[in-house]
Image (cartoon, rainbow over all chains, first blue to last red; front, side, top):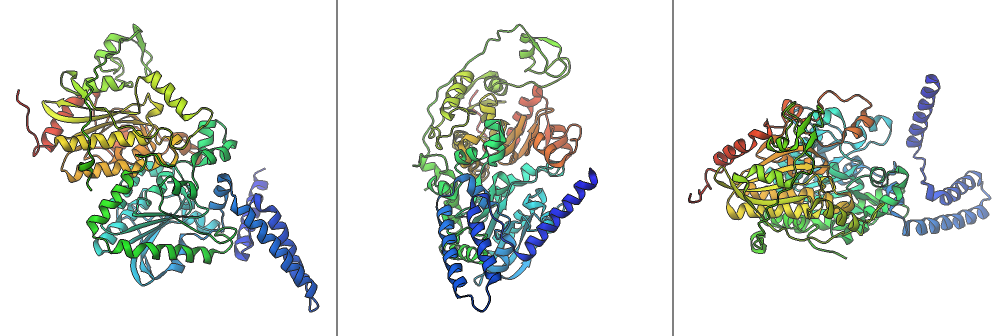
Length: 341
Length: 288
């Protein structure tokens, strides 16, 4: 039995790696018809020889059809589908945002107290020439990197590193850019022993008190306390299909509905989409994603995030630090105080 | 505009209520020995046989904390009810109604002020009996009101925490109470006022990861469960047996996350001493 399980696991591993290496597109269940069309297109492409005029026409026709279907599907994604898109393995991750948007990047490591947690990465660099401090949760893309980054679930030392970096930014007057993509803080014995709750609380406190602009962007999944630890910024932005929630819909369903299969219902009820949260005035901006989600054209999504940051940053940099902090406070103080549509 | 200009003086209600126990005997949850309910109350709900600290109601907590059990409760600002129109197996509005009827409380936090050791203090008590002491917008508002009152009176704020975490039925609004309550703690810090946290059983999730861990002095009651993640979630994740005493007050003390574990009988004295010392600058003793 064990041998079979092991070989199964190896096969899955191999498939994952192959998939990643070849950048094979991974489809979600509601994209089935698009997947079929694209497979057909690929087949036609492989078949097409020098006399392929008819085939070219067919390919164009099928591509347009696939586009239309994709557009239709993505125009009315349910919250449950958005959860799937937000967690899509091929969405660009924090490392991709850093490598594309940040130049002269120097990664910084360690909390100077206990260790180095690679679930939260960060460093100093330039964003469109402006020196910045970047901090983000990193999930990893393939098995090795996922393990290395602990699937983006940070331990106290990760949050304490984030605090150290934010304070460093504050001392040198550098704005802080955070990228949030995590299912939540690591629920482990070691994390609790080293004060996970305190580390998150202190991280929120640091976000709120640094005398420099903090722009937080939810690029995939914003999971609960582990996300808000990097999310109490002057501006909180979300990618169009990102989600941000107090609890995962699965956990919420098993607690409130006593049935984890009700996750889609819970996702509906929790109002966790970027569109809902903008309406509730809990976030400031939605960043549009390319057709079919950030996972289809990562570079387009990354550029859009860069443009959104560039649109917010100058006004924040121009503010007096005391005013900046006061307005940041006011913004969070207002949350939940008044009824919104 | 500062928060001060917006501040509305809370109406003073001065509610003093005593609950009469209808059961003559109570069984200790820990050692299962029978205790005369009257004796148990006299012992601050601590088992005289094994020292187990049983849960305290909000009214009991306030009575035990203030001098002569005298205090003034403040009326708390109202917040929009059920902002998400949330419905699980039950409507959130119905759940709130039921909980209010059952607990005789409006929400999961009560705020009062009075004297502790002859010194002014504001005390915020979380009610675990109200939807597991979960944090929603009302709790955030209550905690803010407590901090503002403390600043107005130049007195310390003491909070007794007991919570299962965020109020899921308020979705992201509940998560945003983490930064919101943290702002309240910052306001106290800037005003140079002591903020003391007494962690009681249990304090977990979003509450533990915000205002409950940001005290100038962190105190816990014996054996209180304190942590971020729930024990079942941890067990399911790491597939290991949890160590003995894991996430209990003494464990946190050993791991450097608390200043002290204080028996309920000694709490009032410890609090009175600490606020007398920390709030030395601001103390204006009321005329005796």
